[in-house]
Length: 124
Image 1: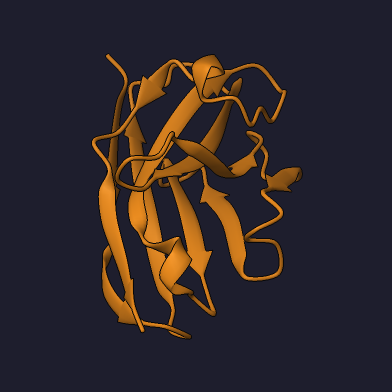
Image 2: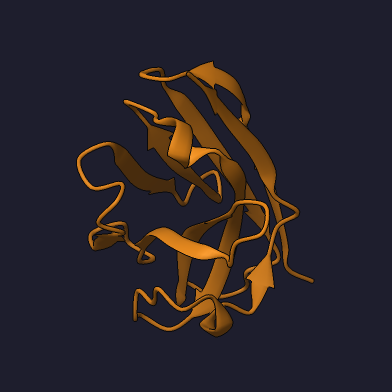
C-alpha cells in the first residue's frame, strides 16, 4: 500500500522560506516520478514541481522557477520542496503526488497516489 505523508507547512512572512517534506512508503519499484501540487481555496489544484526517480530531471511551474527547488533522497524515500522568497500568492495546501513512469507530468490526473496535504500560509 502506497502512503505519502507531507510535513513542513506553516505560517511564514512574505520573503521567508519553508521546506516541505514528503515521506513515501510502499513504492515497490524505482519507476516513480514525484510531484508537488498546490490548491488554494476556490481554485483548482495546480502543478508546482516534479522530479524523476534519480533526481536528475526536474520540472517547475513558471510561477515558482528560481524560487522553489525540488529534490529527493531515495535512501530516505523522501521528496523535498525548498521554497524561498515566498509570496502571499503561494498560500495554499501543498500536496505530494506519485506517478509511475518517467514523464514529469504537470497534470494532476496522471498521479495515482496523493498525500493528505500540508498548509502553507504566507502573510504580508
